[in-house]
Length: 262
Picture (spheres, rainbow, N blue to C red):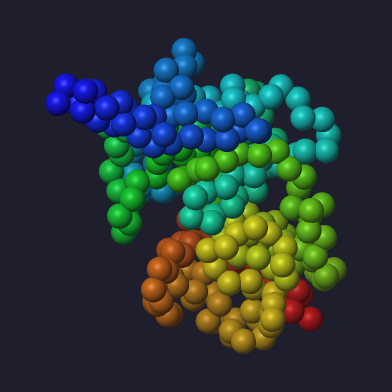
């Protein structure tokens, strides 16, 4: 019986180690325990968390401290992949700006012994790893640049270099602005004619461009409040209000998608 008890204890210990969440950052893997025990891990309070929509306090590591000092001129984007298929393309300059007065990015780490609360209208938390921002207004950090349920952070080329088909086909300045809106707000979940890695929503460019089967008022309504237009199992899109996506930027997004449909 004593031997059996020892074997069970070893099995439980091995399972616990194997089950500890890990995050890959530029080919280096960190466990939650390693990150939480780092000397630069601090407690931060985010006054208006973009995902929880309220004040939240986290144990977190400055994101810049986890990134190599230099990636050269080729890699200018930090690709944040979540476990649910969300893939944000965060300009690296947005992160580095934190060292010169801009918004400061942190990697919040969920302590398995003290799990975070569930996200609004979800059954899971934002953990185990979540990019949060201190004073996001300083750098105009957008809602989709707070990726949670993170699995990896990787240095890549900018979306337009990787997927030239994203480039606006219109000479209209409004459509050109809409291209940036699409990359920030839509590309994390949707592809466009095969461009992008997001798998949470349908491709908005093929087999038919979205503007050929959804009216402009319908598209605007879906962006603002998807559930008010249509619902489906496993619906993830919660919509973007005017505070997150101002009317002028929604106009630009529509102009971009119209141009891409021609």
